[in-house]
Amino acid sequence: MKFKKMLTLTVVVLTVFAFMSVAFASSDALVDGGPAFQTLERIEIIVYGSPQGGGLLSRLNSAEKDVFGRELPGSLTERQTAMLDFLEKGTTTQPSLLFKLSVAEWAVIQEIHPGWSLAKRIDTLEAIVEGTVQGGAFASRTERLIMKLLPEGVLATPVEIPASTVVKTSLAQTLTVRNVKVDDKVVLKLIEEIVIAKNLVAPKGSRVFAHITKVKPPRSFGRASEIEMAFDALEVIGPNSVTVNMGEAAKKAMEADAGTIGAVGASFAGAVLLGPLGLAGGFLVRGSDNHLKEGTFFYVETTAAATVKGYMIPSQISSMTVSGDVTSPQGTASQIKP
Image 1 (spheres, helix red, strand yellow):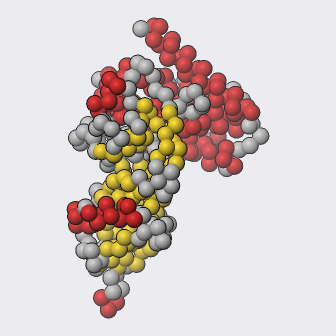
Image 2 (cartoon, rainbow, N blue to C red):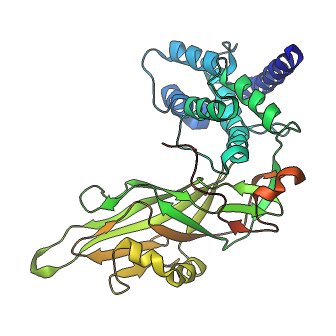
Image 3 (cartoon, rainbow, N blue to C red):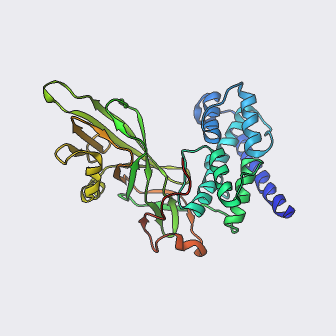
């Protein structure tokens, strides 16, 4: 047991120093060209679910202790760069912490929760696997879970998602003309995992992002209200994003799904599917009681071929997916409740 704990700690420490060496090499630049506080807020949203209060250094110290169990050396910029890379990007030899955690979630419940904080995801997974929430740094806790679930470890493999790959999603919230405005961001959830060449690319629960392009409330003389939504990107387990829209393949899939339009609450006469020549490829619905219900199905498709990181599914757990290269719903309702 002591050996396993030391091995986990060693893996985490070596990985941290690998990220620190990259950060030192680019210490003159702010992460993504943004101000330091914006980068820190991005880190805190990943780790805690929301920005925290206090000064920059004290907040960064707290985040580092919670993730690594210690403060990192270097300047503010170097430390933030190393932290964000560790959480999101990974290296050529090690996937990011979020990649590993998503694979661990999928291995247990065949679904991921990328909208949850790192803290909540690890706490919940530990409660399911070990029966109780464990203490310690998030990085070492994730490595411990992986050693128990997937002793061979988790590696990332380059995978190409073909153009016009159609995926099925559902709205994560109800949209009405009263609660949305133009440019509001909309989140949908993938309800059918994407597996390509035996590589898990996007598990069930992965996010699809969209935005509102038009909102018109009911007007005089019986003129209908309108909501128009355009689709932007699919988030895979990298986490990377692949651009999507409602192209011809997605339109055909949506039109073939009789329950989709019915769930929206609009007839075909009131619903317009916008193709690639529409506003980024989206959906427009008109009606006097215009709303898009939570859980409404939408089909979208990738706009071009893209190379992303995937997880090669080991043969011993391959039964968790349908054989072959498929996009197929897995399992039953999640054991995890929001």
